[in-house]
Image (cartoon, rainbow, N blue to C red; front, side):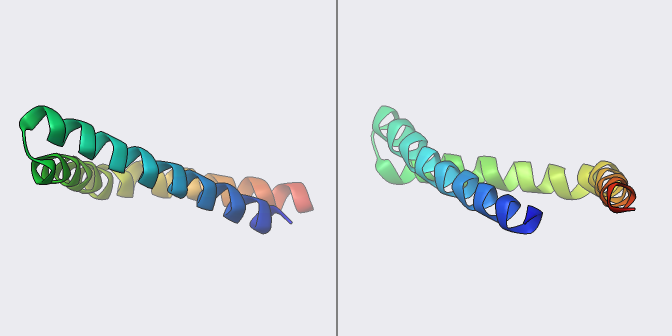
Length: 77
């Protein structure tokens, strides 16, 4: 049941993120004079964020995920 709930929340979050990204891209593009520029800016922002998450997340996210798995297993015992 935790997996189903987590999956549903993740899909809702991803859907909201996609819609907000489109809105932000169109808004930035309108202010820059070309819609494509807005999508370039938002895409570049996501690229920078993913590089940071890849480099920093390996240390922090790995430890967090390990601790969460141990906590969940400990709850079940």
